[in-house]
Image 1 (spheres, helix red, strand yellow):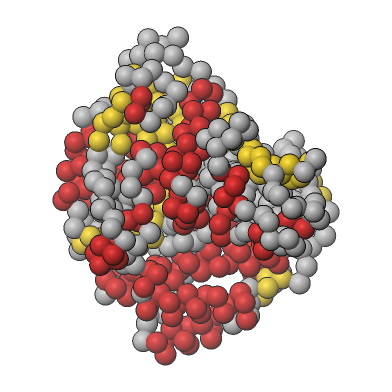
Image 2 (image 1 turned 180 degrees about the vertical axis):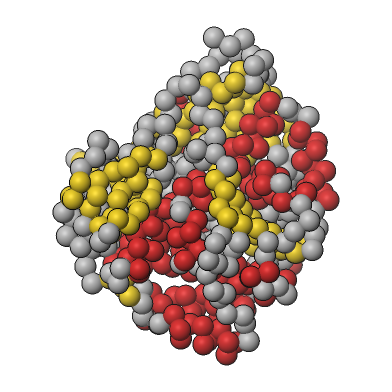
Length: 537
């Protein structure tokens, strides 16, 4: 047992990843992940709305309860230091500081709402301040945001990529549901955050899962058939079955089994489906069959297509805003689990990254990597704050950008109306925007590690169940089951007049089908989160 240990945590929109370390030897001891986020909702905006409408204290406690489950699974004692990284919303929920400023844009809006934005500079606090399940005097390190809306996760991808130290024009992307992007042009930084949505990480996909053991993370073409690529227990990629995608026939069996498909696997199927003519103008006629009864529906393709469209529209918006052509970018850096496991060439072919990319670096989970650096060297926190202070960036609010609005409307037209891609490019030209450049014939692709978490330690990676069930009853409920039957995530159940809600499965305030389908109008969503003997938040 190590005498001095530390813990690093990455709070992602889709889940939590954490590691423990021996502070003396700097060796990784163990790694744990969750497959979902404890808060209801499929994206960071859902989490923000939940905290504002249901209550920030409830959101904070749900998150801390989940983090404590992850910490306890790491099986370490003598914890002295802990560091956490994530976007501004996640770190504000973790630290339980004002979050409403992230929901409003502009000084006048904040003034009208009587909101004072909190400091999001680097800080050190004690674990006892937020009820972490570690010794109360444990030092907790929180890295800085660049600006209040550009968080520590964006700083992590800039810092760990090394792009800030290079004399080149670079595009750095954190491939998650929130798709943080930074375009560096002649030393000036342009940033944006594209709400790509949960499909990019395998959620809202019928058979989708986050990157975890026994998930299909990539697909390779062999003749007319598709070879499944599956993550093993160490998150290393192994060959799966060879499948006929048109009918699901197994041409060649493997030793690997599949329990779901990641967002990167869906992207691979999307790319190959277009190449094989199974997908045309954003549509498929029937299912695409994969291994072990894993398949993709037209709705799945529609969801991943819209997510990919958000990437392409955001990249074009950044390029137009910085007065650069996409084919002038020297290097592209792909961060995050999805950015690591996706086939970079397939990403280029379908426009997830610029097709003209000549040099691509897949750099893994930079958020967890920076949290690890801080745990092993707490003095780094001051250096990171100085870097954040020195960065003068131009943040492009995509929600209010006319460029993004026009381009993304074209993306939606592909999947909702079957707009051919040549018409898409014609409209770009009509708007006065650059067209997509041709595909680079010989890109240099560098995958820096074997897996997105470069060193998981000697122990198997643990997948932690963070399910949290809330219970309540509703007066005048007639048990018609309309609310339960219409729950798209099967998060709601009813037994003996008592409702149970899995917060980690629930789609949250962006859904509320349970409320809308209640015949008696007695279903009150926020009642699940009121304190009772059964719901101790």
